[in-house]
Amino acid sequence: MKGYKVKKVFLEDLGVNNPVFIQVLGICSTLAVTNVLKNTVVMSVGLIFVTALSNVTVSWLRNIMPSRIRMMVETLIIASYVIIVDIVLKAYMPEVSRQLGPYVGLIITNCIIMGRAEAFALSNPPGLSFIDGIASGIGYSYVLVVIAIVRELMGSGSIWGYHILGDWWTNWSIMVMAPGAFFTLAIFIWVVKGIMYKREEGRSS
Image (cartoon, rainbow, N blue to C red; front, side, top):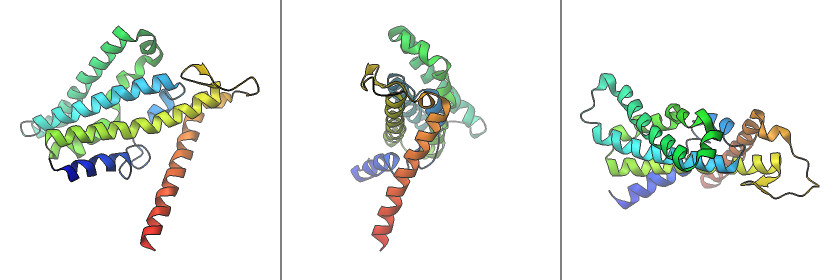
């Protein structure tokens, strides 16, 4: 792999090709887990693991995978890695596993993973596909972590379970509810895209 190509793939997945605020994929996770930072981090690590290894596996099998059952095979590959994540969480982090509940299993249906397998891993070598999986997972994760920090801080006055804001703060109940996730995500996308558009205008002028 050429260094410039690796760098290009990695940086694009973090920025101009980000799966959340550019492609607007996987946003159901903002509703599901971002009310608590710890749960968000655990879910993000699980998704990075699944996305990276699914990309590698699909890339390895791309030349022998029958096209008529391609998506079924990809789903089976993704599900296998999600089961590993679920087993590890139940064994080593049972409390977090209980809090996340069915949302770990729903990683299988996260369109970011299938999207990268279809759009990238099927046409690129395993090494580059691994980089793409890692970068896509990180691009997804840092957006969710930012949202989780805002939601937990404003909704509970805490970060990672530690109380940050004093008694003067009145918790915003809406921030730990479903609408809070979408409002925060919408503001994040608005701010980031606004900055990107200004940069593009500056370059073109």
